Image 1 (cartoon, rainbow, N blue to C red):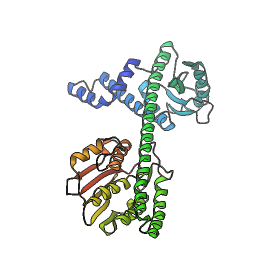
Image 2: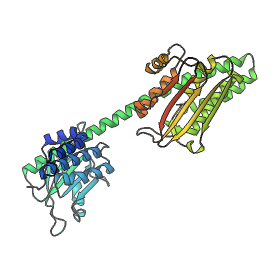
Image 3: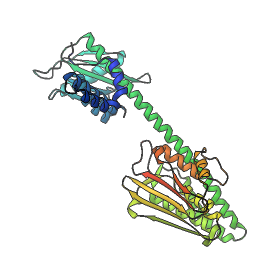
Image 4: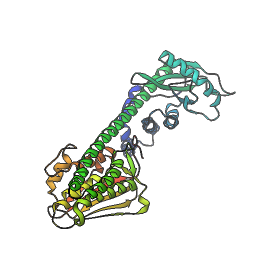
Length: 407
């Protein structure tokens, strides 16, 4: 038979679900005194190999993922060589990865595309006689099985050994089914990320009309009383609108976000005059760090209109950006009228775009966007109380997640 040890498909399915428990299983075996037995060690090695192969394949059938996967698959199967190919065997880079016993690679790489073509053409396992690449080469044949996702060919798995038999074909077919399952999960992960990215972009699009309406209201207040000032403000507004409405990426450098804030606050100062004091504190080295597009302007708008704008006399709004290693810690602070904590909870729990009493549209929108980009642990934190002002904090990782772009 083609000599390599393979678990049953039931074993692989079980390991796919139990891989997060490998550390616990190892601990229990050690406590029971059976950790050093050959059988237990072999089972743990298989468990680790399966988990590592699954982790590699969850990135999809890319060249980098395939190279990581075959390094774990070959010892897991006890095979002489294992290869993963794309679904286009005629492509120059069709062979994504080939892992073999030292010195037994080159000649077999040349025949692999033909074997893959036969397997994909038949839609099932293809048994190939593969002559040795040199005297003493242990490879005498290969079993090549198509990999499928969503009913279509995604690539092929090839396992090489010294002899062929019906049981070896069944074994490789079971392994290929498991690999296909991991690729299906990778596609689901990618689809979920794309859906989250699309939802985030839709939420961002809600900010621009809201922002534009408020800015035009400010300009309109000067049209009759001070036409010259109104014309100047229209030019300021044009600069802000170009930033807010441009077809840009999902992320923008912090410097651009702060520049947008500066122009927006210039518009607000036209309304509030000396009643509004605005400041920004950020170290220069943080300015290139990418942040979600228009994540700060809605928070500053909320602080001005529903904090400072609701109190008599002068009010201050301050944006502070701190370096926290792998994250930026940003706060938007005002000394305005503050809010009831229960009201804030209601705002953040409401659907984006829903108005609750005094507003909060931008607050809820930014909170939802941050959660969808980074996860629930990165939602807004709001500290406030009536008469005590409001501080809104957000944590922005410096690394941009997959499926999002930087402009």
